[in-house]
Image 1 (cartoon, rainbow, N blue to C red):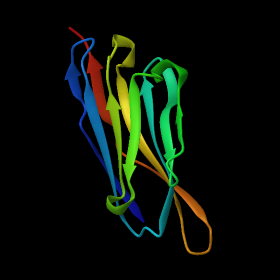
Image 2 (tube, rainbow, N blue to C red; image 1 turned 90 degrees about the vertical axis):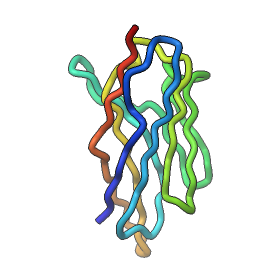
Image 3 (cartoon, rainbow, N blue to C red; image 1 turned 30 degrees about the vertical axis):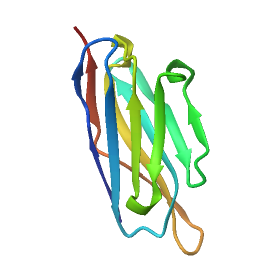
Image 4 (tube, helix red, strand yellow; image 1 turned 90 degrees about the horizontal axis):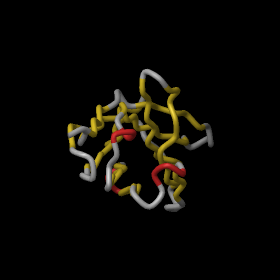
Length: 120
């Protein structure tokens, strides 16, 4: 089993910055992909950014140029640096990891979510 602990959310004015962290722990052989998703009451959960074990990244069009995802493989940690935040970035942000065991079996895990509110 794998546990994810997210941190870094909060209230920030428009134009501000936040840095989210996601630490994975437990029975981890390899983490293939680490990603951040977000969800609001009005919208389905959507991918914000993801990063592979080889550091290939993928971003939603709405955050390109403003957000940056990174990871520290030694610490099983992913980060999401969010700059130039907009009110429409307000959401609960979830960390997701895709792990792979020694047999090649992939399992996905979700964090509990952290609230990001962009408001003056």
